[in-house]
Length: 114
Image (cartoon, rainbow, N blue to C red; front, side):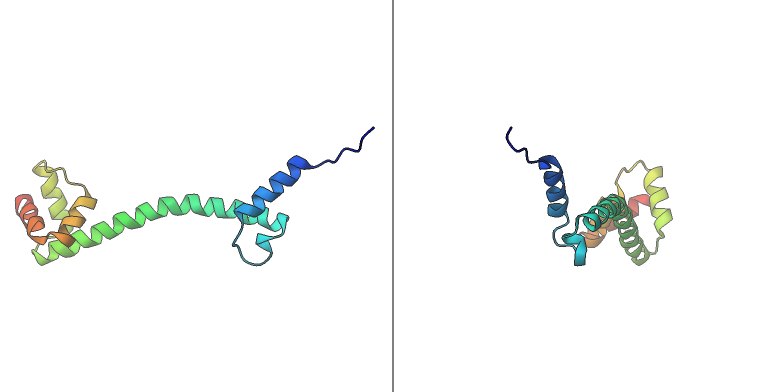
């Protein structure tokens, strides 16, 4: 009977894990056991960070809007309340862009919200 070489699937799995951890520091890029745990933690952190990125973006938009409001002697919460009362449906991302790049247009929106 011919000789059977084993471990084809296991080798493929190990190789794929090491390929994913390429560029990691120290033994986590070359030693399977360390690479496996490093990849596990990296995936968990990347999932969390995608959520965190959205939170940080929204916080930045609010800061930009508030800074623009203060120049017009208006507070952030008064602006948002005024927009809701007047049924002006602009999201915070758009308002932040208006405040930063188009201050005249933002001023008109703020006047309507007053």
